[in-house]
Length: 85
Image (cartoon, rainbow, N blue to C red; front, side, top):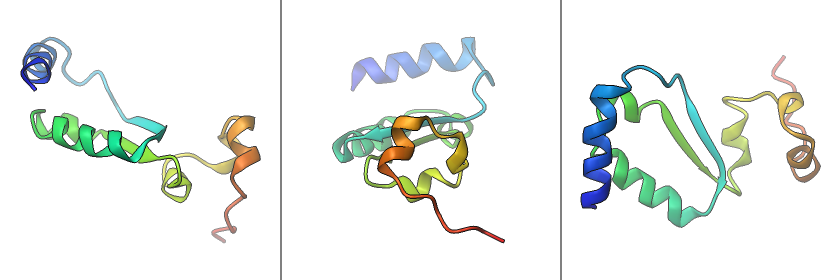
């Protein structure tokens, strides 16, 4: 944990507002929990920009990325969501 605290301490003042949104997908569920703990050490504004989605949580991915914008290898494994119209 000391490493993550130091990383956040160094990164926040030197790289402010460089990130618009970070989406990590697919990741193991265990990593989702680890990242949520790490985010508690970050500036709130920065931590709100980070989304870590478990591999089975593809429906949450559609909040950020349209189906037709997904790489082909992800389209093969996920069905197209129903139209929002």
